[in-house]
Amino acid sequence: MGTDFAKQVAVSEYARKFIRFKAKQVVRQSGFSRSDLEDVEQELVVYLLRKAQQFDPERASLNTF
Image 1 (cartoon, rainbow, N blue to C red):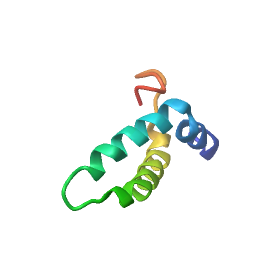
Image 2 (cartoon, rainbow, N blue to C red):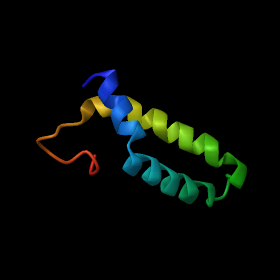
Image 3 (cartoon, helix red, strand yellow):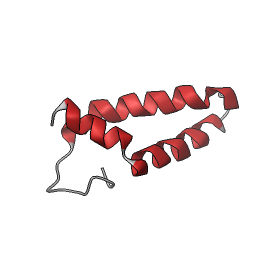
Image 4 (cartoon, rainbow, N blue to C red):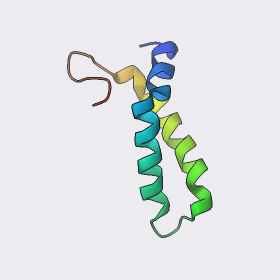
């Protein structure tokens, strides 16, 4: 999968909401503060962009990935 697909995955509404949800979970853990929320979200987006090339539409839907 190319970079266009990776961008499509990362900017989908589902992905944005899920990333926000997971980032909020992370910053509630010890060692993090509420001010880390944006940084955690950015790290999750970068992770998703790196992993997007592994998406196989025969195995799962885009939201499941």
